[in-house]
Image (cartoon, rainbow, N blue to C red; front, side, top):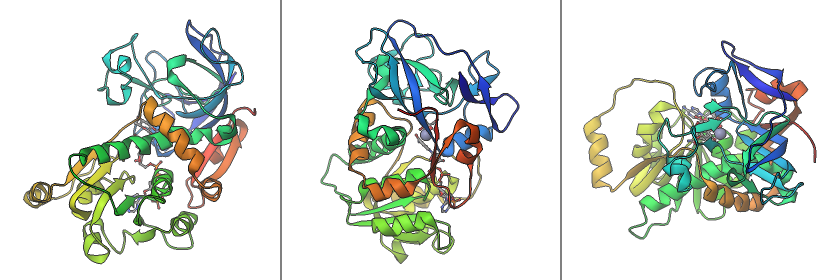
Length: 353
Ligand code: NAP
Ligand code: BGC
Ligand code: ZN
């Protein structure tokens, strides 16, 4: 079968031939339909994130997948079911995090991430997976099923942010999303119905397709070149919730300066190393005297995937149609990695239903 892989020493992906995987006991064989591409995939190709499976000279990429069960192989699935795989796997057998159904909080060494770190991903014609790592989705959602994993990432971060404020009465009325990439835009869309005042930070000039989406959602665009994050409270308003999805290192600290009293910032970006000066005293005092919180969030578990299926079903068609700017066959995979301003979210199509 064909697969899209990064080979050691290279910075672009290549289509390779691999044997079709044989299922172990308790594993289903899935025919891959589509695989989404995100900022993490770009970081993997650039050598900034992730790692090869031990002893292999390549990593099959792709961690946002949707497929159709080809061979249920004695699992609870039936051939034809549409499924989305989760990302993390235990490196050796199992461990306490996986047994509790909380692989997303496992420390390094206690997990591999398929398509990212230590285990092959889903950009292949077929993959196998233990049934507990497959989430069934309605067949009608199959074309957009590759959005379930990234939406589950936002679900988890929002859950962590809310739970950090759960000891008092807190309902975010002002929310700032940092970043107009796919993660930022999908989160804006997820919040559109429940939040009064939404803002989105970017660094683009109009006209721009991502800013058209920001407008259509009804959010206010904040240009970071004119208004750096710490100046946002004065220029706009202090934010109850900040959702960082830029991967720009300063934003990790600066998010605290955009927060209202009792506000929380969820940090999701995976930045490169960066050194800059910070007034640590001011930062520390702001956090304490304002009851503010910063919470980092990575990955997601089955509960977040299930919630993501509901969220995906509720997103308006205009939004997903504008977000997904291209779906490409393996033969034209380079286009899925285009990084120009007209590309927002792309996917590879490995097979059709
Ligand atoms: P992306 O497509 O690269 O989006 C990042 C966006 O942030 C881009 O639109 C970029 O603008 C904007 N940006 C960067 N620096 C900025 C600045 N200084 N001011 C204003 N805007 C700025 O990536 P993504 O797929 O949406 O993911 C976002 C981040 O989350 C990445 O770092 C990714 O690794 C991380 N991530 C984390 C998790 C997790 O589990 N924690 C999951 C998925 C992704 P331009 O396009 O104009 O440059
Ligand atoms: C993936 C997560 C993963 C994270 C860190 C993200 O792009 O969606 O599942 O945990 O990268 O590798
Ligand atoms: Zn991802």
